[in-house]
Length: 308
Image (cartoon, rainbow, N blue to C red; front, side, top):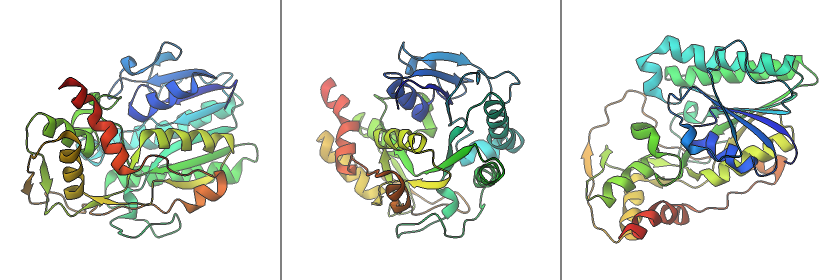
């Protein structure tokens, strides 16, 4: 992407800031964030920062060519703590951003969705399987997708691509540290192990995740806009690793031998396993993940080794 004016909502957050900083090298980028989980400290000087809420009436959509709508209350717990706010931000905020962008002439929207509504699946999961709103978060993001379907069907000059993220990570040396308990488990466990603390694994640690490095996610998001995609697409690697394997890889990379602790799974409808079938997105854009999980763990651990 080159020479575009781009709006990234949730632009000071983890994925949003990585995307905004990347695109700012060749584009005019505005990052909008209410600073609930994001911080402008994540952003390069080339990115214009606007502190605002996606529910506001006067968003900076004038002259925008592409909107990346990444703003969301992005965890199960956030929606359980405040379901009304979650629904407003995740669904009404989505509609508000799309409507203002559309009215100002923007025809390309790429938005964040979730893979958690697939439930637990050990095999690579395609986009057309039955999905289930087992949590308020799932319900809000599926609602977002239904509105995306409506916009794609109703407006001939507007395309919306929903990206179903899997387990996106970068590490505390990137833009994740401010997320605290909402950061990826890899990032949290690496911080704990590097400080000699035992990470707590739910169940027996056999649950698996499709861990996807944020650089691969950023590349995918850029391709989705460049190809003006419509519909929903998985953005994951197709490989899954257990939490036990993750802890072993972290210890190997750090040269430590910290053993995890195990506790019963405290949640109903806990997603035990995730794995993406990204073939649809690959066919549409040529995207392939570049960072293997083993390489990704080393990237997350490198800053801790530099401190030794």
